[in-house]
Image (tube, rainbow, N blue to C red; front, side, top):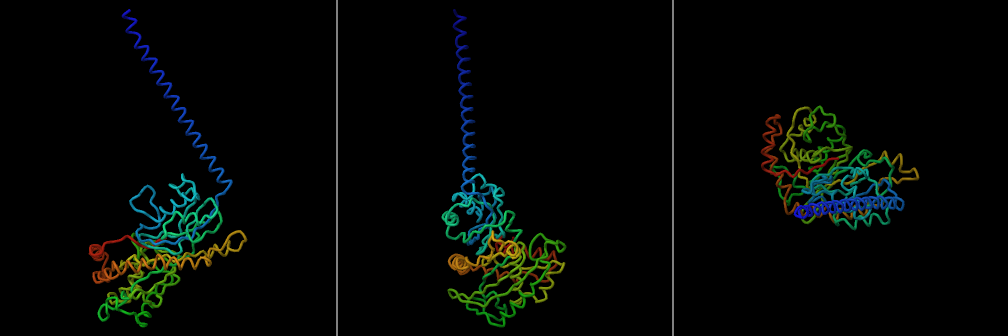
Amino acid sequence: MADILTEEPKQQAKVGGETRKSACLQEESKALEENGHDAKRLKVDHEEQNKKHPKRKVVLLMAYSGKGYHGMQRNVGSSQYKTIEDVLVQALVQSGCIPENHAEDMKKMSFQRCARTDKGVSAAGQVVSLKVWLIDNIVEKINSHLPSHIRILGLKRVTGRFNSKNSCDARTYSYTLPTFAFAHKDHDVQEESFRLGQDTLEKVNELLALYKGTHNFHNFTSQKGPWDPSAKRYIMEMHCEPPFLQRGLELAVIKVKGQSFMMHQIRKMIGLVIAVVKGYAPPSIMQRSWGEEKVDIPKAPGLGLVLERVHFEKYNRRFGNDGLHESLDWAEEEEQIEAFKKAHIYPTIIQTEIEEKSMASWLATLSIHDYDATSQEQTDVNHKVEATVQSDDGGDSD
């Protein structure tokens, strides 16, 4: 009897264990079945979406104010620095243009931006290419999920192999700055009351014109030596437009068009011209900066730099009039582009300059540079400048 009593709990435990094991197997089986159904449903949903709205390669014309963002290009997996693409991709998913499971890997959508604008840099004519579902009212739906300072201004169909970066022939940037940046350090007023004279404007344009053509710009970026072939860049046009008044501050706009630009290249090109016009550096430094030796070149503030437009002349000649694709010239969107700049880009540049005085602060560092420095001396000078002005890591690049 005692033996029987002691055996019963063992049998019950065994039965209970088998019951629990069976229940677990059933739950796992049910979960696998449900996951399978979810995956199947997702696949079916995508298939239905593809039938209803097939994926097509398009380009989006973008405009944005870059203040508060760490550039255009997103860093997947890093939420510390917010970028323009982070906001754009989220809007594309929310509007139903791309599948949610592709958001973390936009290569699946053949995504490519034309220019990789950096921290604080704005754009009036950025272009990205990607595959999307061509849903109804697609531009309006994307914009409904974007803040007002980031807009899609146009959409056009392109060829399946189109790549916005590789197909781009040239890029045009503008740089808006207060004209007192050109006041001579020894005998001109250095504040907002300065007014740019015609003689000084002509001198500025003479110096800017020297950049035209192909030069070795290794001194105008970082981590490129004089023998690096990628340091050679072709500049098509560079000039400063006549000044204008805005909120009591006289401003001027420098325009530059080139095939492509390296990190910080435009800001250093402008910084060197300012140093010459103000009398800190001799005009001969322009030619010397394209030589093999290291030259200390100041980098103008990032505020004011705007990607104005990107150019696709070769693509337009080949496909713009083939009857299937449109020319990527955006003439019809010009009015929207100008309206966006007036509403979101220029006011931000002017207001920030008035409040933070970034140009005036930077101008105070020009005397620290040694424009005849050797490589070692320049390293020491750069440390001094970095200690005086906090780097914002902004710039221009593609």
